[in-house]
Length: 167
Image (cartoon, rainbow, N blue to C red; front, side, top):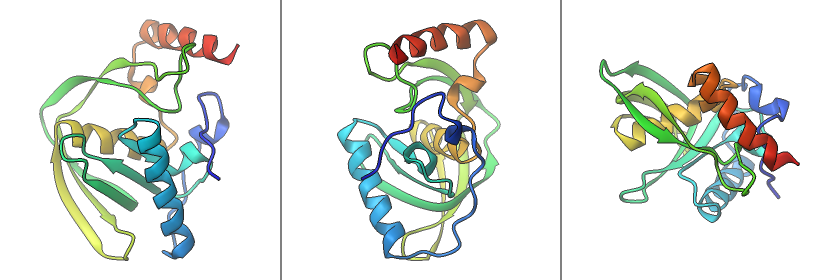
């Protein structure tokens, strides 16, 4: 049974190791992560968020609910334009036990390469919300959280809400 890791857990600050072997256990874990993501009304979930320090994630495009299962994802290029969007995280919860949100500036588009659960090499250009999700989730694989993009004052406001959750 997978368990969500929350802000403050050192595993969320760990750089994940590449996946060496795609097997039934990995596929089952990814399926369980998709179920957990949907259950918690999320759009993405990275392995460290469920206590696994390997480079894989699941995500869903909100418009058509297409599921991506990405193993060893790598963003190979970023678009020139940036945009500000509100982000939250299933691992960064406030006192109400719901994700805390904040505006984050990121590139508007990316090109991402990954291996799917069948061992096939994949590539996609993503823009808008899907680009946002894949950047957020790949950050998790490098031990980075969306709050790292915030100004000191804004990060402290978010962390005050997170600390209320932990009480």
